[in-house]
Image 1: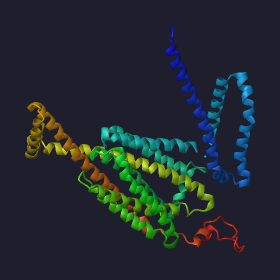
Image 2 (image 1 turned 135 degrees about the vertical axis):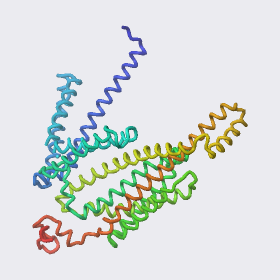
Image 3 (image 1 turned 60 degrees about the vertical axis):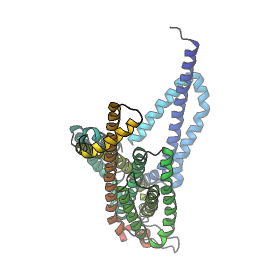
Image 4 (image 1 turned 180 degrees about the vertical axis):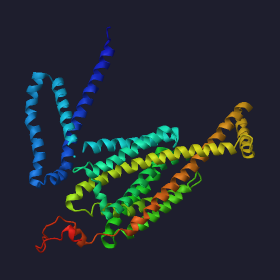
Length: 438
């Protein structure tokens, strides 16, 4: 088959894009590996009991190997061909990366992947299949078994994927609860509010973004203010007002409607931003400030994973609840607001009169009026569903009140006791207290 000039040109352009994609992916993987090594350096130092001077050899030798190989690429490309050489390098890179992965707990990696991904997939199926469907229940069961096995493996592994023993630190656990609740509510509401503003109130994306700007600005300012006050008054006097303010703002969102004025909505979002800043900043500081230096890398990894996983599950859960509750309320309202009900007859009559004024026939006017009525019912059902979802968010915030009441700023004595045993105090030359002395 003969391909015309235009066809050859299209193939050439497509081939160039394929080459570009392959090069971008390869370059990205090289940069990712370099970043991974830098991030993992504290863990390497801890696991191998190496000093910083010796541990940096890992990065230096990695970069040195790259520098030594680069001059050979021209010769090897001429000998084997550019495409073949690149393919060989990608295969070698993938295999050696896999070997490295099989070392930072592959059982924990597999179990965590199965447990978390299956739970998320089950949540996305709830809206279609229902909470009690065999598929959803089966996925949740698989997720539960995988996560239980994952916890067991992580607690027994000498070098676990995530060190769950960090939760033995009571202050960390309580602060993490408060911090993760604030993160969950922040991201979940940032998902729900644009949906409400655009689908229910009919705002444009630009108008929605302008509505959310005061919350972001308030949060930025409150984080800085909380940082200044933290050293003076400690975490609880900041977190408790922030938590109560966030609860109140979620309660106000629970009453959100199409008739809510723009000014009132901006005030609610401004209060949300201030409250989240005062709630999250002290908790975040405590989360990273109550560990001994040798446990900091593991605690940071655990916290960062939770900070990504918890909001992901929260958004999936709230999205599922919004869909299922909207369907429930629409079904309930459809049973009461029928074409024969008094309220529906009055609405349909007015709508038919308006349509008739524009010259529409009786049949078309009646059909248009029914469609408008269905839209009104769906809007009312959606608003009711949003009310319930925001109420659930308010209850979740309120549950974080208990850990926030018992949190306090670690004293200098406690911080000294958390330092490695046998460490020497630079100020007076005396040995620091060991962790066992607490």
